[in-house]
Length: 305
Ligand code: PSU
Ligand code: MN
Image (cartoon, rainbow, N blue to C red; front, side):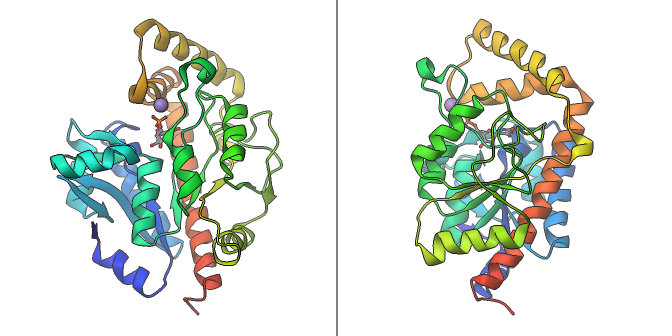
């Protein structure tokens, strides 16, 4: 594993670091928006007082913190594997290149000593999972890896109720930042209540400190950060598009690892610029919130000030 010198220095000094995933770069957005977004998000983390560490596997090497060239490569090269945790051993043995999902990013972040991670949306329990058994390995990883994942909640391509149920079973703390409702990515609400609520980065950092440094929990923490109100996409607009996307999924017989990218791409195509604008806005918002949480957590962990 190669930790970028800037990231390694910050970690050694106990300064705040925020991990960022790379599936969103290679598989989540088209070029050149993906590269621009990745660079901008790194800038937002810096502006918030933390060091960004975008995580990926390139030519069989785990990278924590990318150079400009490496980030450009992930944004442009085709044939980059989508990599969850179980794909990492193969990528390393084969010398292959993979963009890490939430699960694999958490795993590598944790190995490097990073505790806070910002992304857009997390994987979860798929609709129809009672027969397909399609549940994202993101949830499994959250049960065993002590990293806080700041997301805008769970996209309604998934069964949000069952996702929250499964996180409860796995013993993963779920907290919503500043709202009594659990958010659903494009919307500040999902029709489901927040399992727990805290207001602001300092309070959330205290929860992380309690989880890991006081109680010694081994799990991650899911921090749901609602999209800013001005960027919300109305639920009705999304619902029809998602129903169509799910029908296409059945028709085309898509299964396994391809399910999530397929649904995300269909939603992108059919909601046009509006969903891309919302997506960018919530990722920016999550990066800023994650940086603030990392800054507060570094104080509590007693490493700085
Ligand atoms: N949800 C989104 N955007 C994404 C993903 C999920 O709204 O980009 C990506 C993340 O990388 C996440 C992965 O970790 O999809 C989950 O894939 P799967 O369902 O195959 O575990
Ligand atoms: Mn799956």
